[in-house]
Length: 132
Image 1 (cartoon, rainbow, N blue to C red):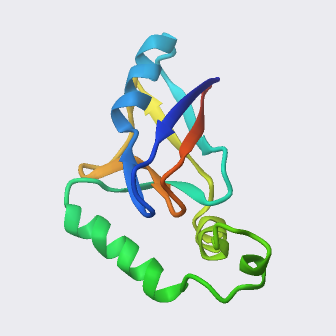
Image 2: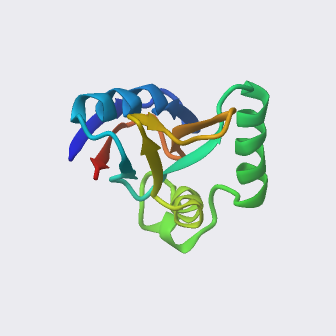
């Protein structure tokens, strides 16, 4: 297992992990299997999504911010970050994904990429990547 560190710059942010995951698979010398990418935080997620169009990524955050509003949650009364909305988004999204690979290459569709999703930045984050 490899743990990588990310530094997010904004409250809501995507970080494309696809190339890093490909590099780790290549370095593993395992030609076929599953790679699991897991966020180690409760206000972030990992998702397979189209990573080509920045408008789609903006739409993604518009949807979540319109659907789950910031502030007014019971947790927010106890937490100085006012981040209950981020916890809820992360729980619905899921903290991790598994992706197959064959012949050392990720098995993804044409426009699919693996992205880390920040809902409560900016912060320093960690992601565990396991290759089997």
